[in-house]
Length: 146
View (cartoon, rainbow, N blue to C red):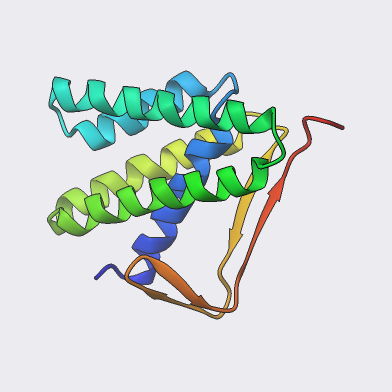
């Protein structure tokens, strides 16, 4: 089971994927996460690039409908869960390296001048098996239509 700090990094990473999709920062964020998940294997990295492209396509399709918020939340959760699973299986030294890489990608996504934001606030929450229990909120803001 991951400690809260690692769960928070995974949550921020999931948010960064969703936040960057469709922006100028996407290619850099996409490549960075594919590298993290690929772990040095070209075939795995290519599969991750395709998975990330699928995420972007799902998010773009949702913008045309009325389910944007639900789809964004689901995609954040999807990538958070994947990051948690990866971090959980890594030895401590590799965990620290991946955490640093994820934090750099999160910072890159945040500085991309993004009009749409995904924010997770898990104050007083309990983290159990990749789920958040207790009080907490998620705010998804779509500024594309403004």
